[in-house]
Image (cartoon, rainbow, N blue to C red; front, side):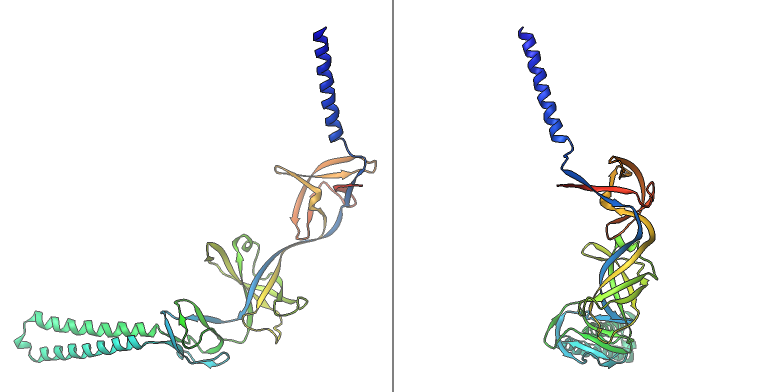
Length: 332
């Protein structure tokens, strides 16, 4: 009797658990499915990057030494010739060292001349020592003059100064760009594109550009004209410099303006497409759920193509125009 009671008790517990699971997992009649009709549309992929407006041919110039700026010889907009000095650091200490080195050179050269006049009184080793002393003194002078030249920035070619980022009295560091010189009046946009996106770009691709200084409705057409072969690494971030040629340069545009660039890297026109949320990915397979006219649904495996920026995905197989796919449910 007791055994039967226990058995019935176990059956009742199992029944309760089963009912609880059923009520928690059964479809809610108040829920309705949300669908989307498969249709033809354009699907495009876009790479969006930021950049800077720069001259077509330019060079950023910096000092090769650390020091205090003694004098700046040019202003923005001035034209210069190749070799013209643009700025110089304080070289008073170096000039004193050079003066002392030149005195030492004169003494060494006089000693060498005296040794030549009295060569019969000196053995070959002494004459050679005098000559080596002169050569060492000349090398000291050449080295000091070369070091002093590092304190001067000169124009590398004929052009126009488009940027000046220093004043007299400031202290500068090695490698910090303080001048920009442009060879021509043309302007292009340069952008550092991450390595994850660079494989999507190629020369000739069209782009649209907006500038932070102008209204967002001012849209400029551009195209990719150059992609650097070698990478630039800044703080362990790998990128490649891409140059964009702007179709029409507005008179409001200035060197150094920040730009936002959108490049259409792939586009499919008039293809079947569904929202991404209509798809389910399991492993390497992708599925969509069809909604039938009789109220039933059917899951089918599909092959996808291009994934667009607007959330639409190209459908290559298994669906046709007019099919209705489930994209979710809504509680009513």
